[in-house]
Length: 191
Image (tube, rainbow, N blue to C red; front, side, top):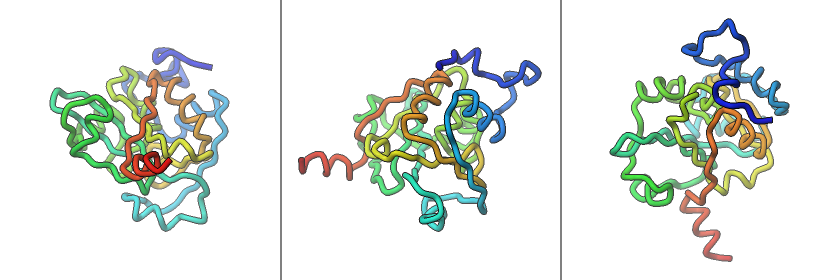
């Protein structure tokens, strides 16, 4: 089931398009798409190091999410395995962009509706114009189950890797799956 950005954008006609989705809106949207999910609540997690305290409690691939912009102003959300080494000086060549830098907190809120520390591919629900290109690291997509903050860093939602693709497409974001991390490239050269 694929919905156009105009039709997915809200769970109710009573909610303004200018409003941001809440974690409950997001989970209801996953339900409407038929995506199975499980959500765990926890203390706020701001970094990958913080989230590693939950290993063993939440199974599946854990991620790092980078909100980046290039010099002309194109926006990118890089979603990679938490252990991936992403070289910000060269990744622009892999994703066909100009030199990249981190997007500001204001730009992040404007386009994805989340605060730093809560960056997640689920925030694509808050980008109906498709201004942000979503790029998934191929290594990450090898996990059967993936874990992301559901728009807040006080919860983690687990979904199947293939369902992440389904979700992104339903929000009008065609994800690109590329080999982004140095670790992935080294592994590929060994084979």
